[in-house]
Image (cartoon, rainbow, N blue to C red):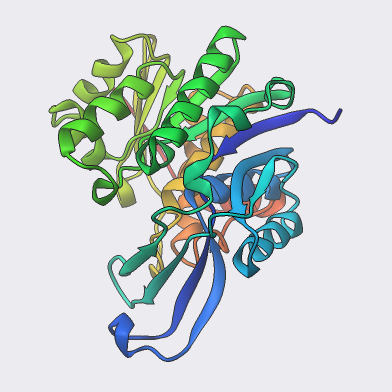
Length: 321
């Protein structure tokens, strides 16, 4: 069996990006692409040369076939993407904007991916993976996906394998904010690495300062907390060190969606290579900067050579705290 560097799971969707700017209901032409936070991470890691696997369910439909072929084209392992003959593949519409965040409308309720359950968990397959990357999105899709996530997390922890967790909050998918906060924190506190955005960290912990947000999770047993600060870069804190790693300047922001997932790609790649935390976060900042300069969720992600070239040709400094 081929080993897997990183395994992740969640919902992949067909995404229709507007070909012109304006309200979605006025757009006549769209371009179909692949969407999904976890697929973004898998694609980004595969581009860097790692063996990445994505686990999910798709419908027996055109969108499902599109997703499978798109992931295979990016060299992501799809052995454990199951085809569901009862439920469809989800999709979304995404606006084109010249500044700010695009409008996104989802059509995912009752999708095939939302029926991913513990009975679909292949223990032998997950055992092959060195690292598990999770986001908070599957936790919100259904009780089935939440239980699958809990089982996967427990399996990795019991086998002394590393887990990274990106909250990736989607408030509209939750019944209440309290349920979202309680559930996300339950999972986050069991991960080795937690990667929230600053606003997410504030909402999840009630603290305003990055240092206090990080301490909230460190006190619960998390090894490392990295807080995304947007264009300002990122702050990290462990039991031994803390610092702010400045972001890279960007001339023009084209699309912000996928930048956080790209950041996770950079950090995870550094973890896999046992790099110092500062260098791992630097990679995350670099891929995030590249991602916002391209249309589409993951089209701006670099290969290893492009990543090294970008970092070597940019000025960046860290601030020790």
